[in-house]
Structure formats: structure tokens, C-alpha cells
Length: 259
Image (cartoon, rainbow, N blue to C red):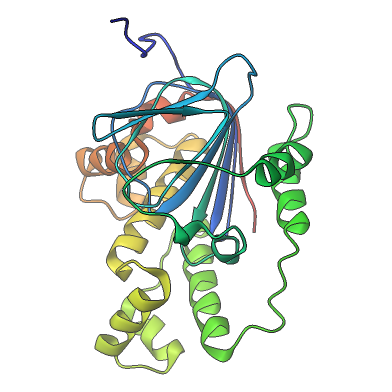
């Protein structure tokens, strides 16, 4: 049986990150089994090559696949568009992503595939494609309730903290939410599906990757992103993204951080 892994495959392309959503367009290189704190939708850019994913001994392939949040998986190398959507994001409800079983991979609807193709193309910068995709989804938060507005504001504070390399702590966030620290921890998990500690770790990883993109040394980056050391930063990157930070820092292409 031949191997599905290309030992020489590196990462190249564009990445874009905004509040609650991220995207990658280009060649997805080698990666270790890992899990995201977000739903992943991956579409092949090559009509002759389907998306291929291995998880728990199962091999899935289709033109476009949904990998539910927290599901450990390995993505076979190829030319892909990948969208990462936080479980709290309005798109999760818009596309009924939480209705799927969290233990297996699914083929997405033809309507969603068409919407992805209309928004993203190789000739358009990825940040513009992501903006078009969000607009096409017709997200409207004007009717959101007070609780939804509160968690959105908390997440905005956390995201801006990433951009400034200074994440706010639990005590401050609890004060902003008008809750005790213990109640805030329970409330945050109810709203996002993740403990604050896990969500902050995900954001600290993104913070570190922004610093690498700016040319900072890996050791300095790890400390700037509040990791114990370089090894801790590397382990977290492999756990959540399946690749070493050094591999991502060598990626040929652009990374957009949308404020």
C-alpha cells in the first residue's frame, strides 16, 4: 500500500485571521495528527485531487470536507482552501455545523461549496475573499440578545489582546462581564464550548505566530506569547495545528491579521 504522505511537502500560500474565523489558501504541507478548537472546512483546489483526511483509523475523501472542532485528524498534503470557524461564531449556526456528530468527518453541501468558490479564488488576496465570504453569509448581529453581545465583546477584547501581544486575564474579563471569577469561568465555557484557559492558549499560539511572521526569534516569540519556553510553544503548535512553528515561519506567502 503506497503512502499518502509527501515527505518533501512544505507549506505555501496565504493565511488570514479575523475574530472567530481564519482561512488558509495554498499548499497544505505535512502535518502531524492534531485537533483544532474550531470547525474546519477544507475544499480542494484541484478537481483531480479530493481532500483526504485520516482520523481514528478512518480515511475520508471528498471535494470538500467538514472536520468538527476538537476531532483529532491528519490532513493529507494537497492544494486546499481551509476555513476555520470558532464554535461560538455565527457561521456555526448559519451552516448548522454543530448538528454533526463530533466524532467523524463529513462532506459539505453543494450550496456551501458554491459559496466558497464564489468568495475565494487564487487571483484575489485571501483577506478580501474572507470579507466577501462573511458578507455573502449575510451575518446580522443587530438582533442578538444581551448575552450574545456580552460574549462577543469579551472575545473582541481577547482578540485585540492577541494583536497587541497582551491578553487580558480572567479577573479583568470577569469584571467587564459583571461576574465573579468562578461564575465567569462557567459562563465562558457555556458560551464558547471551551474553558477560558484553552481558548487563551489557542489565542497565545496565534499571538506567537504573528511575532514569527514579523521575524522574531523563536525563543523570544515563545516568551512574548507567554509560553514557558520554546519547547512548550512548539508542542502546543504541533498539538493544535499539526506542524512546528519553524515550518510555518518558513511558509512562502502572506499572513493577514484583520482587525
